[in-house]
Length: 452
Image 1 (cartoon, rainbow, N blue to C red):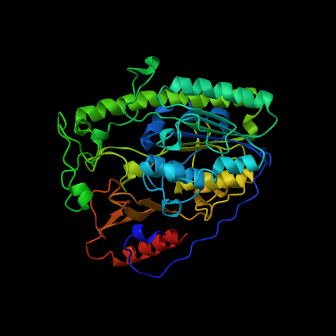
Image 2: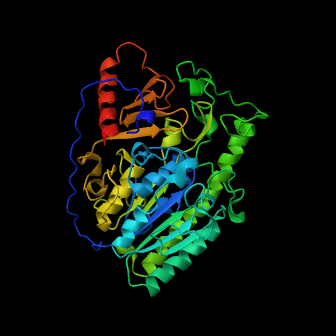
Image 3: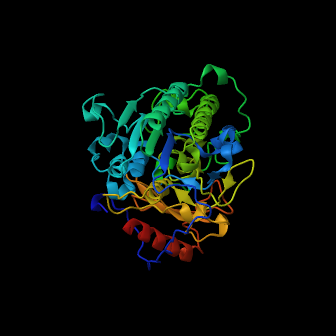
């Protein structure tokens, strides 16, 4: 780990992780070189999957839904770099959106696919700073056979481009394919198509109903939270933590939250179009699809509007996988797998199922196959612990387990939350008596993760 970005940790005994072993799937339909599609949205918060009625109806019966899916780093450009590298932030060392131009793009996921004979296709928003930091729109990053950059948020144009590109790949190219579809939606300001303007989105509870919305007492929180003002009607006439002050208006939050969900409905249309086309072309049974967001989004929780925080709203994301070898089945809805997984595991699963040879080390994720191919995934062998880190300004690192959240800020401030009894992270108990053993255990897990 880069010493200048290392955080102060308590020294405790390190506890080794369990080794994960991939089982052999029953009734395999995937070839040795399956098609792979990654759909990544921009700032889509976890609860919004409820509005995706089409994908949540389990089209073609092989979807898995991970309600405990997270991003390791909730800075959008940084999390995209982690997906492309298979590495934690502290290993690839791109710590902010402004630094993505420093990435060595000759050694990323599309190049690994290309080395194995795949046709590689990109549609949408590339890394933050593209194309300017790479010298202009004529620059095509290494490894891509087809590269279509979109800087706008018009979801229907993305969807139409995907149908055209996939049709060409299947009809005119005798290769397995890798498609990366990177939406710029539903990032603010959300821009839903006309057919969804005014659509009823009440299936998703408003953020203003959450107990941690506009949290009144933040005396137990670190300085970055204590310095955040309360949300007020009308917002502010100056920036708040780099964001426009009008975003700290509860009325704006509700309006933008609603538009975001309405635009997500169009993204859902696109997922249905993809699986319908693949089924029509006879490719669906040999295609793995991942649907995630590059970050979660906090709509006023703990006075935070935006991302880049260690709390659930920033790090928890929509996380769905279409997997033809899925052992169990959810019936009329995706199979729910209640295990802790992260965006790092997406890259690891891709490497596993496609037989890629990563040229970056270390690789930090875990293949999801032990869960996807288990008859009972909720009891399958799996280490339910995740790293959470952000290494830019107001840096922090920590771990999230089934029961606990433990965070160490760059200034040494510690947070501990009992997620079973305090799911909204209202009470930091790190400085209360009686939790030394819990902190010791979690800090040991954090040491292990940071050493990977």
